[in-house]
Image (cartoon, rainbow, N blue to C red; front, side, top):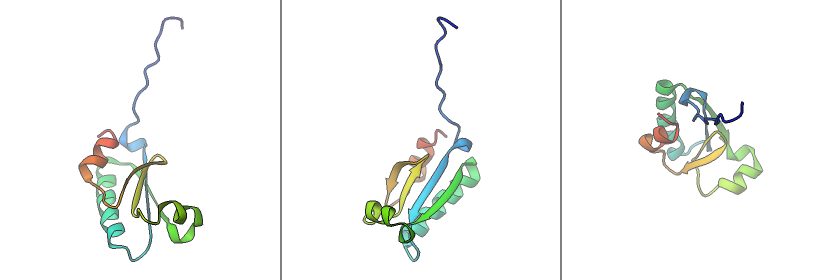
Length: 92
């Protein structure tokens, strides 16, 4: 329709995907996983986890930053996951 503006709505947290990039035996990764899991249970977003030891490109890109969190494929944070910051970024 002419004259109608498109309203772009921010996705709901339940429609988002948070990716944790880390490696085994990483205490910071364990801490990040705990925060992400707790928020995922509360807000309903999907979680995926990638191991940098199994992907040379991830290893090259993120080795010095793990754990790294992505929201919908875009880097959100690294080293530590702040629950309030993640919640805000997810629109909750």
